[in-house]
Length: 239
Image 1 (cartoon, one colour):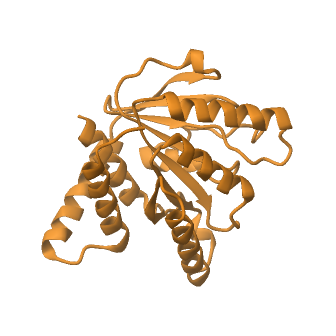
Image 2 (image 1 turned 45 degrees about the vertical axis):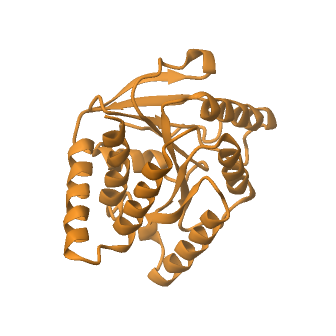
């Protein structure tokens, strides 16, 4: 996955400011403008338009794509729904860890959101896990319009072996990815601070990961505007 280094560096700095807060009046104005661009984009109509279980069935390459990945029950569907302001646009599988389907959503004709199957469900058969890894790696390596993967971590749960394996897979695929904590409302502030530091340290060990972490809650919507702004910048860069 090849992007201009200057663009990626700018996006990383911009994301860090959104996460940490602006320091100067100029940065505050830039942050407000970015948040507004994110709000406007994610206020656009978002509609499901395609599902694929095999690479041969993927939709044609068009505009920029953002994929969402994470362990089963990490809150991926809830996060996507919170981003687009819908309660049930993305739906969790009735059998977590078993679905192999990639679901595609069009956001205002400017950005495609790709809901990837969850990984790490304990009851999933070995063949299902192997199929997941094979399909995901092939998709990640072969999708030229994929601009970023949003990799989710549950703030309440320790990092698992398959989380590290997924990050290694993303590094090998040379796909830029952003680490995002979910369910921040469910833990106490001091616990959340430790988790943020842990995930930030983890990100620094992986070459394809951004070195900052966004913290979100689909219940309180904390962090959702910042994530919208970060993703909207990718849509603007490709416009």
